[in-house]
Amino acid sequence: MNALAGVIFHFIGGFASGSFYVPFKKVKGWSWEAMWILGGLFSWIIVPPIAAWLTIPNFWDIISNTGNHILGYTFLFGILWGIGGLTYGLGVRYLGVSLGSSVILGLSMVFGSLMPAIYYFFNRTEGKHGIDYFFTENAGICVMVGLLVCVVGIYLCGKAGVLKERSLGTLGSEAKADYNFGLGIIVAIVSGVLSACFNFGIESGKPMAEVANSLWKSAHPGQGEFLYQNNVTYIVILWGGFSTNFLWCLYLLIKNHSFVDYTKRDTPIGKNFLLCAIAGTTWYLQFFFYGMGESRLGNGASSWILHMAFIILISNAWGVALKEWKGVSKPTYTAIIAGIATIILSICIVGFAKTLE
Figure 1 (tube, one colour):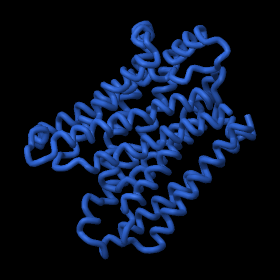
Figure 2 (cartoon, one colour; figure 1 turned 30 degrees about the vertical axis):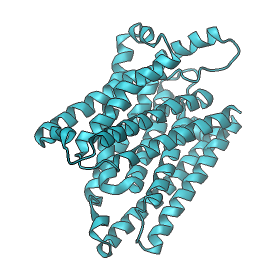
Figure 3 (cartoon, one colour; figure 1 turned 120 degrees about the horizontal axis):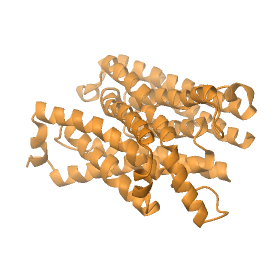
Figure 4 (tube, helix red, strand yellow; figure 1 turned 180 degrees about the vertical axis):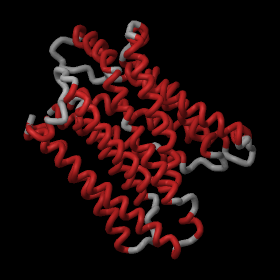
């Protein structure tokens, strides 16, 4: 039951992450930086402490009593992840929801799942799997197979993107807007590698989560692991992420004089604010539910792979629903559908792997 619950929680988190950019696409008359930083205020500054306070009332005491080296590394990975998150928005802008999310999150999935395992191979830690686990244990081999299958699915989605670019010459000007495969793929690679740092931040800040877990288990004996233990760690990681994004967006707001976006009377200001708030809150919910899934499956490769795979799945489903692939050739549409189906298969394989442990 723990494995099934973990998969369900990861699906909800993946749905939130795969859907958060949809409200941004409805914002009218605002620059990218104006809407991105406003949504980020909810994602990184406003909602996380509220979520922590509701689930871990003494969360600030845990943070203040944590060693500076733990806070420092957690914050640093948050900064690096913030750069990845910042370029994620640009990647989606240039490649579209489907292709942009597939490439970025695919790279993040591979790096985020395997790099910690390489670290723990050389620094053995109780309860953590080294990279050898994926080649010697049945459950580990199954996880690796699931990862490879997901990479195939990502490749198919990427192939669909290339075919889409070739077909744009026969489509209208609206379909061509903002689409730039060359620039987008460079941004996506940078974003995908650095986005994996969020998982590293969770690993670095694990002592804070363990304190929250211990306190909860003491008050609730025999009830398993604390579902919301990671909510305290997220606060520090997201401080780092906010720092990066705030500085860059502030630079763009000044450079482009786009501060005036917030006062433009010819735009739906109230609606735009609401859409940014919804997008930001929805974005945070991915990790709220990720933490719940991790409490059932453990913070290993399985959790990160499932999380990323569900995000890619939902993002591509939104791409189809938003008609990003409307008007493309039949081989292009077949490739994106095949990619989605392959990713679903990978999710099933990784979920099955947990039953072998």
